[in-house]
Amino acid sequence: MKLTDIDPPSRSFSRWLTDEEVGQVLASSRGWRLAPDGGVMAGKIRKTRIAPSLTALGATAAAERWISRAAAPGRDGSGPTHIMWGIFNARTDAEIAAKVDS
Image (cartoon, rainbow, N blue to C red; front, top):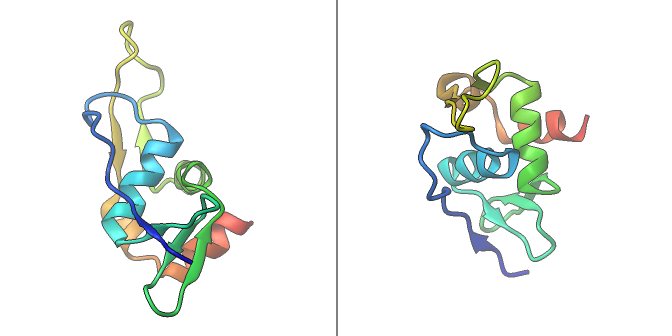
C-alpha cells in the first residue's frame, strides 16, 4: 500500500479551519500519511490506522478539546482555530486511534 504525505492546509490560521483542515494540520505535525482509501496511517514499516479520514481526525480533535474555536465566527466568516499542541502531542498514536474509534 502506497501512502501519500499529508501537507498542512495553505489557509491561514487566522481563519476558521474545517474539521478536514484540522486533521491535515494534526496529521502533518505527526508525520502521518494518507492511505489510498482516505484513512490516516502512522508508521512507515509497521503501519497503524489512526483514523478513517482527515475529517474524522479533526472532528475527534474538536470533541476531545485538542483544538479550540471561537464561540461564533465573525461577520466575515473568519475566526481563530487554535491547536492545543501540548495536549495533542502528549497522546500516543494508540490513544488517538482509540479516541477516533469511540
